[in-house]
Image (cartoon, rainbow, N blue to C red; front, side):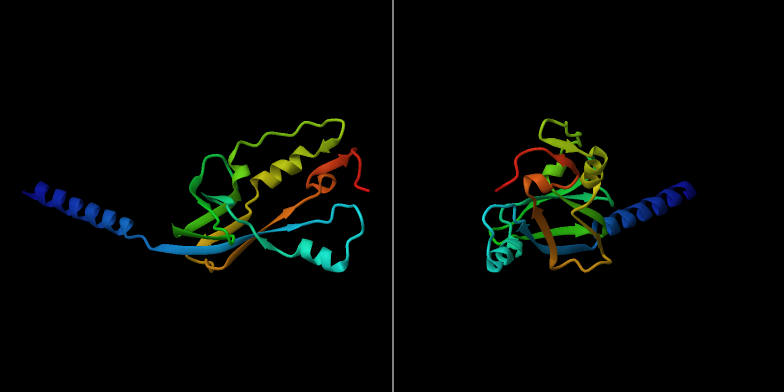
Length: 170
């Protein structure tokens, strides 16, 4: 009888804990993804044209991966989302630390090979690959109106490029 009572208590405790875990508070996360561009050469543009290039524009159909943790790895993908035509996205997550990265960072990091045009700093590229595009702590941080901007770079001004030996725009 005593054994049955102890087993019953453990079973009740287990069921209570399981029920609490399944009722973990969920948070609605919302945000917008934009893109800005650089002036890459050619005829000198007006200030208005330069301002237009650098103004953030909504990035439609951008695929984002949400991974648990503080850095990008190959193993921690939690959720995938895609922006709407206006660059907006919405997620539902439980409390925790999450790393948002673009889809190109979902593949295993592979160093770039130098060639006759590009010379790369692969340590820098790996650090950029590991870096979150946005880091958030759900349950602590404000999780609405997140803004993620992607900078579109010129061929000869890419991050981690040591040397560019190709032709520059005229």
